[in-house]
Image (cartoon, rainbow, N blue to C red; front, side):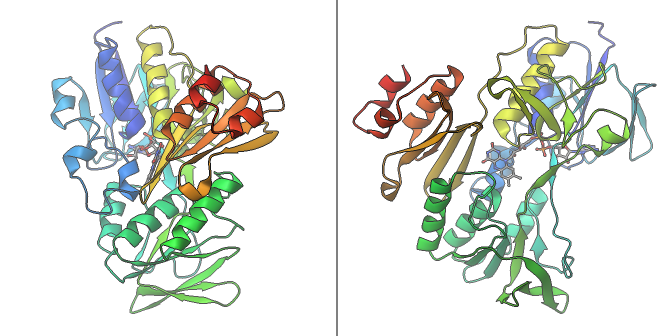
Length: 409
Ligand code: FAD
């Protein structure tokens, strides 16, 4: 590598920030520029719906690395700076400021953005989405004791905010279009567990409900109107209806995109000079013989390792089993794998105790995925079984007197 070679990373989130640090760790001696649209150095988003909303922690705890790290590592970090376009022929990116930066290698780490709900009234004050630290700080001021919070969408972010708001003493209503909570992202037994848990602490959950409009007084939201005519009075609304890949830059530049920027196992895009990592990508998953778009911190870090290794001429890391976590109240959910080609679902442990695991088995008994609720041993064992394509007998898995470690061995 030539010391004047330049890597430019677009997007200073979990993936971009990790890639910058890993490039230095793996011995990249060339120039390195990290460009982020937000005003802060790379930080962790998961606490934004959990500890941060409850007022726990400070900015230093949220940052991936101390602010001084970038200067000390000779990383030219540019905050509050947005890339407007990529010129692949000239190998340059142009910034919103009009400045043009050359690159030899480009890493796109533009993440995803919260989907909006474009119904009448969506611009009223008091309606927020949750993606950035600025969003979280805005939401935090609204979560006061007895404040009436309406949450649109019962996915992970919606339910995590419901838990945080309830713990702060707010009155919470969750409005979901589907017939159950976590409809796209969890199995039925898991969804039923979380529904019961939230309802048990006083969260009102309305299912099969479509938001028709937001109504306000003096420019501020005061009510959510549903298509069946119901009106939900509220002081604030969180719209948590999912995220979409931020792949517009890549699409405009002509890179192959299908629900995210298409990459291979080295995080390479359809242009040899451009890698893409994190939420903005559509990636292969060899364990399942499929391509998917994932939104998780472990995925962002895994792909940052792939891109950094590829650029530094190192062996690529072995593919990981995808995993994810969610914290709600005192419940820690950990999920490993994805429930593709599932023939049988096995519940190990009693959900009533608050500690149990749901294993998803293929027809040959191979463990495809595990959803573990406050059950770290089952999560660890499940993850190992998925990686090794371990086949298990459902009855033994269901029998809690059979040691999970022995089943995984
Ligand atoms: P991002 O973190 O979205 O970062 C992308 C960055 O690129 C952003 O800062 C954006 O401003 C910037 N950018 C975009 N376009 C440009 C441009 N043109 N120029 C310059 N900069 C640009 N995952 C888990 O595994 N567990 C959890 O518990 C969990 N909880 C979450 C809670 C919340 C509230 C949210 C929002 C996410 C959560 N996630 C969780 C998901 C996880 O945070 C993401 O998967 C992860 O942040 C993805 O990292 P990324 O770098 O790909 O994208």
